[in-house]
Image (cartoon, rainbow, N blue to C red):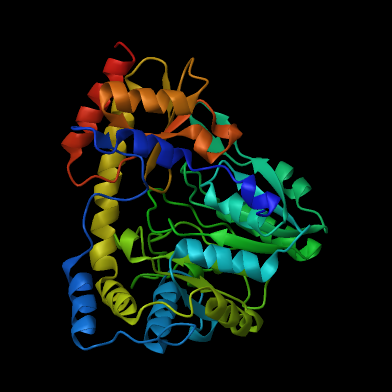
Length: 405
């Protein structure tokens, strides 16, 4: 018999809705967390050239040193300096998160998770036998915020790991700099590890004013000495020391349109790098070289690609949220980060059934809020990352039809 923890794992409700819609003609699919734009040509060409050279063999457990240096330079351009020796390349962002959990959490360890959140995150420590405690965000008029005091009270000296995803999937909630500092200070006192899922940090639409104690070095200055506009959401890397109990997970999937490539990375304290290399060996051995070559090309593109992408996503967000706000019974707030509008439909208490109804009757594919935890029942997630804004307009028309507007 399988382990009870595995038998108890729920299936993906997002997949359940997608399976109900795949194959139906004319369905508008907004259920998955990816853009409908293909990966940039330079990235695809770099991978193809690597394959043509015959780079089909194993690489270092921690990734090509060339890529680790490029990731460190990229991260250092956004945050405090990161040494390449602290970077580990992983076979996707979700693999990075699972490796972090394997490194830090085991049977009976208490893991606090800020929810609602992508279901894979709380599932990972549960798979390892950890005691998962959910700390809910608070929703008000369609917007989600953190009850900081409630979170701090939930993290005690018996809490092994705090897992936090910000910008958050599905809500778009993002930590403020002062909240991050308070959490970091508190976890230093309790001896708790922070595992920060920051894969959406570049998909950021708001400007966070620097705190009075924030130095210009964390944000950079322009030629006149004024702070530069923030190019990413607030990160724990802006505040933490290299030896702090902090592991930050990233991915190439969202900011570089590489969801199918399955490549991510971790930034770790120096003492954790060798152990994570062992875990990579026992999980995947290494990431494919040709995929890593593609990632190098993505980082070469850098802001020249990411900044216009984020602006396109901002326009999609604004267009969709404005349309949703005109619909009766719908509550929604513009997300600060990510690629999702998270909306509540008054009177809907079974989001899975409603999402299936939207697919089968109206050809509109959204993710049910219940997929992200009981805290989000009655909500729906709509991925607005679309290269063709008319698809969003058609989706709005279909939702209005479903609501009898």
